[in-house]
Length: 592
Image 1 (spheres, rainbow, N blue to C red):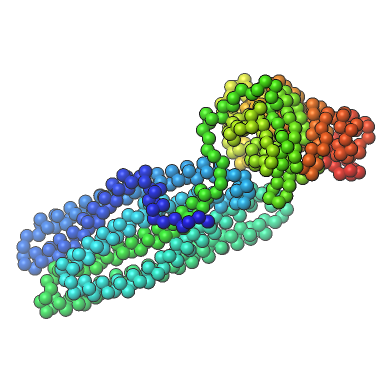
Image 2: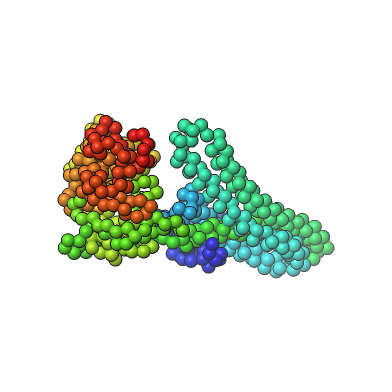
């Protein structure tokens, strides 16, 4: 956690809206000043009634002041609300950009629901500080100050009595404000935990229902909601304890003015009109002081929310790069599309890769095989630069110094659990940019999805549901492959591309991959023998090391580790003449 933000940090966020906030503040303050003039006029009206003077002019001015106050105050508060929304939009834009660029190692330590809460609830708390707190504080100070000056002018003795009442109340309120800030920060954190638990449950809702653990999962989420309730109640208790103190002080001051002022009117030391004005000012102190307290309370809570936002913005993120910076210089003649040179990487204290070296030539298909935990997925993560090597270097089209965006502009990745975004089939296929109808049709045919699209009432504009819930597993996988093909990458990365496909669709997808442009290299992590046996080269990885490399026939002859991965199959199986497809991660001796 970084340094606790102060008022200067909040003002810095508002800098771009200072003109609008200043105009709005001036209008609200003007409305407050118009309100301060009304008790004096009301007192003057009472005196005119007693003396029989003309009333029409004073009453007209009083009504005019009231109408003007209403109009000016309404306009000022609208401008404040608009400025607050502008500040929140700017902060949310900054947060979203930062969250989407957070290092993978940072994202792995935090829950998605809590991150979402920081961009929603916490920024909303800051909006309240902008459009309510600061101006309410300013108006409250002005109104209380103005009422103080006018009450002093009318009767210093009565004012000192009122001041004593409010001084006692102020001590209690001041003591509660710091605790309110701490409670507000805890409440926002608790709400973030609740949102994270709810997001977890909704994401895994199918598994939860099939496992019959709805009650247990619901109980866990409700427990988070209860924790958020406790934190909220603590903050409400502090705020509730402070508010009545102010109200009692205002009521007490009103009664004090009424009693003492009435006595002074009786002995002739105070005019009745002045007493009415004093009573109105004592009443006027109730709302401004209540607003002042509410503004301070909201401000303290907002500072707690700002602490969580600043913590998030301080987390390590990838550097922002403009899209124009993605252009890659021409590769040296004969340079491989990708080359690992003695690459080592560890997850903390756990080594994942140990001195891996290999190269991928343009137009070749390379498969990576190995047991679970051997380092296959880590290789893909390093190629995508989700992590950086601890040792060694990775060269892209002959360059070792490309930026993140430049490196990734050469790649397309199809993950083992295919990512399908909420939207339509077209939205998912054109994620990397607009493509021609001909290219869309070609990609759909390459993965055997064209028949599905032809059957759908809305065709390619059919919604796919949240996370592609309206598609089958195989359809999601083929959609992800088609999306990758449309980006026409220099290097296509496939993590178990056919694991969710039946035989017919697997044949279609593999045929589509063979029809890639001749300069596109393919790297596939696979377990199915049919996926790897036609590869130009197979890399066998075990315990983070590259233990063998060659084509299928060569590895069957020379690599015991590869034969063990095949499960010590018979010669007929090794040559692919099998009814069921063996797995390259099957333990030795296990039944197929």
